[in-house]
Image 1 (cartoon, rainbow, N blue to C red):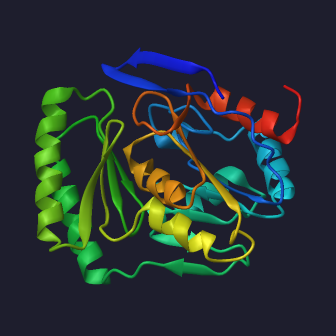
Image 2 (image 1 turned 90 degrees about the horizontal axis):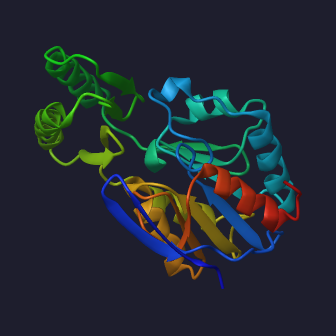
Amino acid sequence: MGESVSIEARGVHCQGMSPPLHRIADHSAVFLDFDGTLLNLEERPDQVVADGCLLYLLDELYVATAGALAVISGRSMENLDALLAPMRLPMAGVHGAERRRSDGSVENFSIPATLIWQTRMALRLRLRHYTGLLLEDKGCAFAVHYRGAGPLVAARLRGDMQGLAAASRGVFDLQEGREVFELRPRTCDKGAALGSFMSEPPFAGRFPIFIGDDQTDRAGFEAVERLHGMAIAVGPRVTAPWWLPDPAAVRAWLRGCLGLGN
């Protein structure tokens, strides 16, 4: 068993067991969140760069699992592909609203174009009254990053975003992350995306491992636990049966599972 760990960060108490090394091979299915899990969070999402060491690690994971490796992220697949080029991994973007299977085929959650446009325009109109915010338009979801804007701005922005979610009449849900509010399709989450992968080759019938770092990953943890797999939380923002402190520890654990040196 792993060593018991406990930390205090950002006023949140997290406690869990560091995961034991698990031999990742062709009986495993590995699902990875991206920001805050494989790479440190930056002030802006467009400041994140995937380094060569990460690309090498993902290559090794893909080979070791015979292709049963998927990235499940809040980012769009287009953005993830740009960061991970030249790789074209199986992945789910925008919390599962878009998904690329292992055979390269893509499925997208359908939202009426008129509602997307109306939501986009209403959001832009409301954001005129703020400064220092970043709107991330994902096509079928909208994330507003307020890092550094302060708690008063966050509270007011939450109310505006809740109003827009209500106006969508059940199509969009408000998802809160680390200094970000996001309007995303209500019926899409990382757990549903993981379940879809696990019903298809090469993932079907394998031991699933999911690693994530914030509240958007809870559905993934729940899905992998239902499948009797391994759920691993990263950092102080969310809990799971197993825990690692940061992306550096995630990479070190994965390398250890592959039998790679540091």
